[in-house]
Image (cartoon, rainbow, N blue to C red; front, side, top):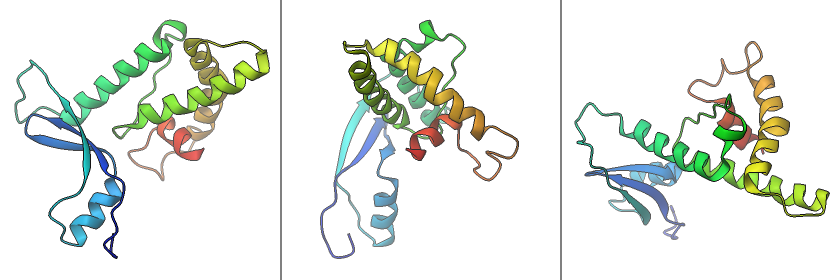
Length: 158
């Protein structure tokens, strides 16, 4: 960026008149520090019938919408009702979905037949997420990482 090269566009949500970065925080930071007035972006416009008052926590609303889509794809709320996957940044449920897709691929190879996405998600939760989350949540595990969740750290660790 310093040398003037174009980087991949950032991903943003547009909610009302505001924009929320999903992916590309570092590129935004560098562009600002270089005094660039614009940056290439892919935008997803989120429309809501609910009135957006200044007090509304828009990022929390967007994370909730992402989580709803994640649950619709994985059906984890049906297969593992106790499961609670919370992420601290927008766009991270998509990262978890990518991990589950990879898990599904290898599980299908191992079993010799196609595994459903919900089945792969439940197995990912039981055999990958829970053991790592338990380790992260051991005493002192998250104290040096404020604002981070076990689900996000699992995605970042891979």
